[in-house]
Image 1 (cartoon, helix red, strand yellow):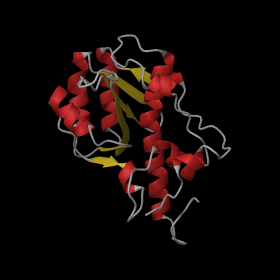
Image 2 (cartoon, one colour):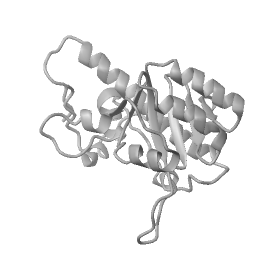
Image 3 (cartoon, helix red, strand yellow):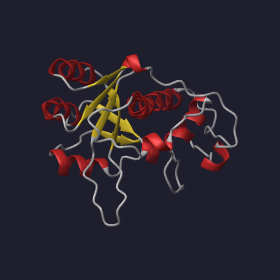
Image 4 (cartoon, helix red, strand yellow):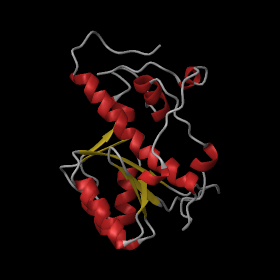
Length: 210
């Protein structure tokens, strides 16, 4: 297993080229029956897909999140964003997320299983949290997408805090929100593929970034 040893603090000090990510043309907001059908066909045909969710942030003390408000799923070339408020998309979303054949990969998925169960009655199947499997044996904490992108691709993943904490329940998401959400799912799949490629390659000792 690749042992990633790159702290978030040291990452900020490294001058790396920007991670390009998906273009807006490769992002579909699933808010129509034909889009849901296309997403279902593409995502269930894959052996693995990128997965993430976004929720409207809570600010008041004791406030309970009503999320997730957006579910993001990605193939190698395209991302599909499912607004939870668009209820006709729930059937396709359920079929994809409950499929035991399709592996869903992402970062920091600790709360997603319970949130999707309580909000939509969806029982997530075949889920892999890269944040846990990439940290290496004997290490605490979770590996984030930024560290993984630097380690595997030698690039810097730009993530806007302003967009990340924006209103994901808004019925009209901005282009910035669409790209942010799409790439959260897509980058997880890319990292997974590269990790698996290296795991299958002849070993010359554990890969480390210091």
